[in-house]
Image 1 (tube, rainbow, N blue to C red):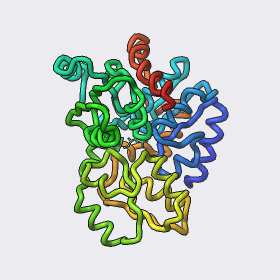
Image 2 (tube, rainbow, N blue to C red):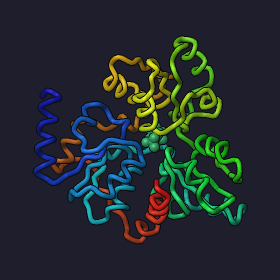
Image 3 (cartoon, protein in one colour):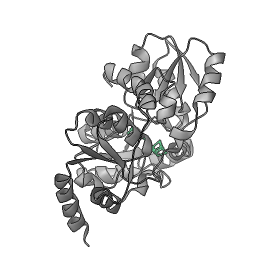
Image 4 (spheres, rainbow, N blue to C red):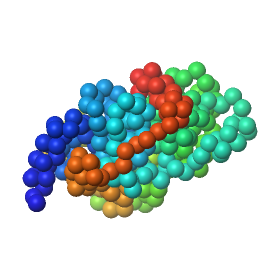
Length: 305
Ligand code: 13P
Ligand code: SF4
């Protein structure tokens, strides 16, 4: 079957089954085309809160589907590919944070949204890559335990020097494997290009950036900039989306290794089977866990995301 035929079947099934398809910006072009909404983690959370449909298929990784479920307990939420996890989200557990809290009494726990529902239960507030700096500045706490990403935490700490940060050794294996030498090589190959980077990259990479932001932030910056060439320091799907959206501009991957196999796991066929009812995994969550975990997301939304 041709891609377009499968997409047409999906569009029909979506209407027949009252389903909303949410796709993270790292999904492939064929999936983004049939999604009702595409965006970064924060935009997806907000969208999830006001989608009118009975059913939601989340194309992304598990913590994103959990977040949709937390905000929409009455809806059926399906993760399109059950094997799509986020290794960073699973790096820490409640016992570790309880231990660190004992060592650092009085610290507010700020959790990056890339965390499990279980870990969110110990957070005072949740943040995304696009809201972390603003929320850390805005919360009343002077002392912040930022989990789990040490790179995003380091970036936030630099932007919010008036507060004290305690960081732990966690992070995204995909972004963290890129070093300064790759930046210098890409800049030497494309001297006129602006360098746009995700804050999950290491500080020695981020320090060379012309712009630091979320996946949507990077895409918006490239769309609105008068520049014509860009080096993209995040998952390489963003390079492809930008090339489609702005064919006259040039986009270069910072590294061929910027590939998240978890985000790449989902296929158009997975989405089709979710809608047929014989694929994906329904997110089921104990109400007690949900109520405890959703508090930090509500708090984030209260701060304007
Ligand atoms: P965004 O918050 O930019 O969507 O990023 C999510 C993510 O997993 C980045 O690796
Ligand atoms: Fe997780 Fe990194 Fe993949 Fe994003 S790119 S989903 S942070 S492993």
